[in-house]
Length: 248
Image (cartoon, rainbow, N blue to C red; front, top):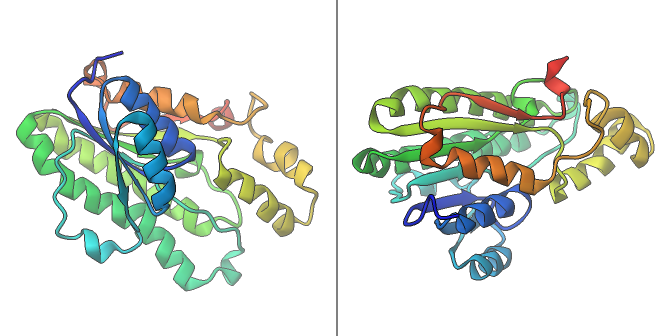
């Protein structure tokens, strides 16, 4: 595949999981990818594998992003964390940190990238949201709030970017086979006071018609297509990859 040859991309949270799958997919399509992650070692390893560039970056330090300028054609906002607690017990500082990482940082990166995209007349903003950007679950107040906010950010970007050849979309997977989800299984077991194997069957996949986790490569494949010229009329959308969860 070379439909994006010569293009550049930034993938946040790119050292593992969904981000790594997106970085590999874009690189296979000819994109020069910058892998941004707080995990410097992981980012460098993946960048070496795909012939890209590593950028050690703590996106929760949003003040450092305010004067940033990005010369990239494709921006994949993927970095995120999870925390499982009841609202009454949710630490306020954790709530603020999660919103900074998953809402404010994407806003600042979009803000930094749009001038270049406008000059080029081509840009793709792809926000890795979640089914929790469209549906809620208990014990995930910060994550659900952040992903709902990311949906709004993506749609405003679509409206402003449309006249300049810039699209903006969300990808909304259900539970993906990543380290983040593996950690959630233990957290959910504690929160619900059930066994870990019950978490997968009774909670994670309860609403899904397809009874398996999403593979990171499946998300990467959709991101790769959304980055192409063929997706030029796709903007302001939210693409569910939830095995039928949101069909209910």
